[in-house]
Image 1 (cartoon, rainbow, N blue to C red):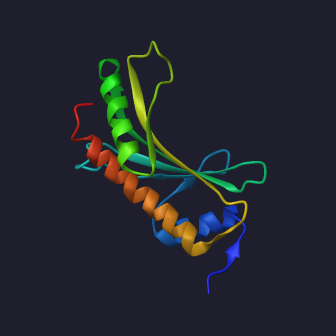
Image 2 (tube, rainbow, N blue to C red):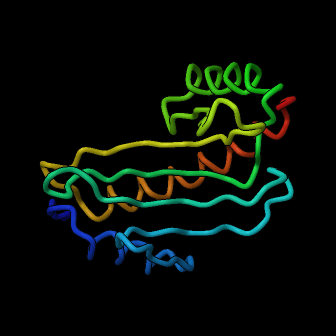
Length: 147
């Protein structure tokens, strides 16, 4: 029987260890997985696993890639992100514009889980896996668009 437990760094790290994927931790102790170049997506992408909230009971999953969107393509990128978000529940896609005067922006993916009430290891493993696969699907899908 699955046991509901508090979200902890140890639980996340156990799941990442068991995945067989190589990961590293940043200065804040959050995890990053760097995927190699994906021919179908025409980019490399990274996954970030961040514990947030006052009690570190919110798992923020983030995805980004080395794909850059030229300023001329920002309207199209926003259109396609909206299309993705309308048709799929998650991850949420958005155009991340750091500086409106910059010539490029990037596409980002995200999903947050509020796990204040706890989570089973199996649920968490499933959510992480599904986030990574659906993120990969986004990068491959957006590669077919004129962005």
